Image (cartoon, rainbow, N blue to C red; front, top):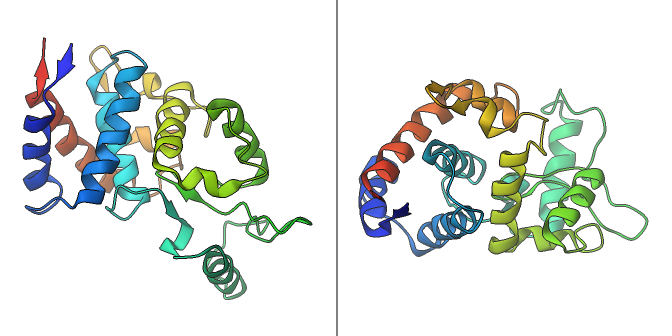
Length: 206
């Protein structure tokens, strides 16, 4: 099975991106498609949900971003600290963005936001790169696409994986948010994922 990317992008342009795709959005989608296909074709609903997750986590940019969409490391750390001190991060018990002795910060980065040093260590094993020593490597699009695809397929974020929600006739578009982040914005992401799914299915070539 392969995918006609021209058909997929034509469908996504209108169904998800309001009639226009930026170069960055195209490159982000391409990166995920390439990594997904390289692993060998699985359920196309997996691909749809991964892309919808990236769409949500990156505020629609489909680029590997810093948490809070900050332009710099310093800005991301400062924004998170202000939010936490202002009581806007009530579920955060440990301020994971604070710098370690070497000045590194493990706030969220990527197409799907990985946080905390231990998760950077886990994704170092996935990517073959030392993300603990250089956390900004998670902002590389190819690296971030690998983290997204492998992490959601193998259940490396929460223990839940794509096959738990999409298998055979089972399709739990809302519950699949548990793969990354509980029920946060689950219904909204489910709607987006169905739009991605329709465009992908239109472009499938047997």
